[in-house]
Length: 458
Image: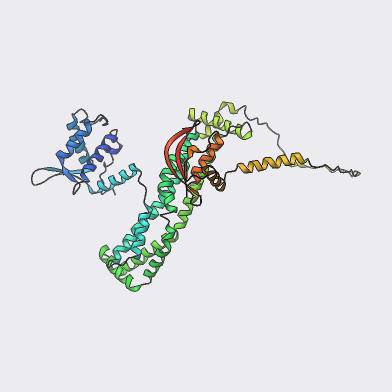
């Protein structure tokens, strides 16, 4: 790679003026991408960068030899620097007009960086449809088609692995949120929006691999047994890759096998994605419920102790091992010493024979009222457990005869009602529910602030 990229290529994006360089690179790219090539007259680009530096929102340049120049001098300085770092090249045509071109590798890297900045999500459906269409179609260039199938399969598998890693990243980040508001914002405004709505939900519905996988595998296996197809494809790949025909034939078998195995083993990745998605949402809800509970029972007291310890650790920036340095913990738990117990300490002395005198066993009648009260408490506790069926019934009950309603119209007087709204929003993504949801603007009701959503009957 470093034989292609200059050694100082990434210096502009890691320097103190990285914001200036990035905004100028994006400005140049936006001008050039509308041309027939990535080449524009230098004066045109200097005018664009000069206009950028004249704006009040432009970042200030520091530490460069052209930092004190006027706006046009800064524009020319940026172009000289980008040429020096290998981002662009400046050439003079026959009319002695200087033209600026982006390097080929610069265009590729820049497009990737722009996708990262925009948070662009992979369209799984595009890859799956492409593979499905190529497998079913007939063509006179089977070698090119097979290479396209292999490339799109690799992009699909890479995208699924990235989605799997992204969910793990969200799980790791969850421990950094210390308030219910932060957790709910991370769950609904970040995770649901960027992972569930954009990728995970489509992966289970419109982009579901299971709809296309059987036919893809069946057709590829049929091709692998077709001698004429193997010979024709190998001859074309031999010409494309400049290799021997026998080697190309081995390549064809290997490519077909890799694609077939990728689709067969895709369930392992999908199952792990499902598990991590469930794990994240359950962890977020449990952490929010933990922070919402503030009882005086043992659980509530332990929660307050842990929260207090967390505050001290964050304030004093302790490592996890520094927990033993917190002063109030010394009086919190009493530990007493005990002398060493040897094997003789467990010796049971032999007791002499004693006369056994039987006693009459008293019969105690059970307290019916107490038993009924305990059963009532148990049933009441079980009734409070929120399941998808109960949430579905809760939504239908509140909607009545309406076809749709807003979440702000649901009862919201205490934390228990707020938890129900959270579950309504969470379970609304499931296809077996009788309602669907669509997020709207942020609202505040009775001190509870959340992103409102429209509930509609399926």
